[in-house]
Image (cartoon, rainbow, N blue to C red; front, side, top):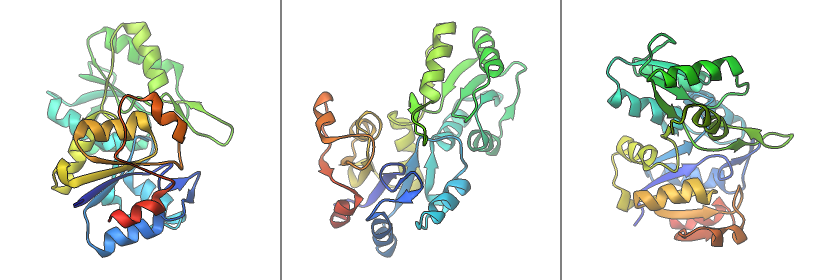
Length: 254
């Protein structure tokens, strides 16, 4: 029996600012039954408060405490790893705020970490500084491996693509905290106070959501309203437990 849920946001609950049919009913049923749940996103641009408001404008009521971003996961992970909590950050408010709340100082002077997140406008100057700091010994951390992000005009280069550029220049592979790394999900489970064997994940991507769920030992529900089409599933060596047309079909599993 599923006692807790981890739910991806984009492509599962919303698409380009509009709520996907069934999303509101799904979240309402979780709340009515008081079932622990978190909304997950690899997007590190926005704070949980920002995302709560964006969901509200889509017609979905989600408290900011129920939103778990790759930025929050990265900050929580680094707080356990850090010696002096000094970081050079390439990213936006979602990431810098999360690190600040964990006690980090943002600096380009002798940082312990270079932390790469997503931003609307990557600065070549900032990327160059990141490369030189990593060459000087800073540890290379990235919020998530997504190579592209969506826009109304088409794909935009995202954290994974810029991380590849820095890796090529430095020869140093980043540690990605966000999905599919189980670190993000395990920290989410800890926040909820639940165990993996009692938890399900709903996502739209085989290469992040489903892989993370499989590696963490969750029950996996793939919905086909986002990045994955049914014919894509056979390209992967693992399979989700359930495949649905949309989140509306997952309601019966609550």
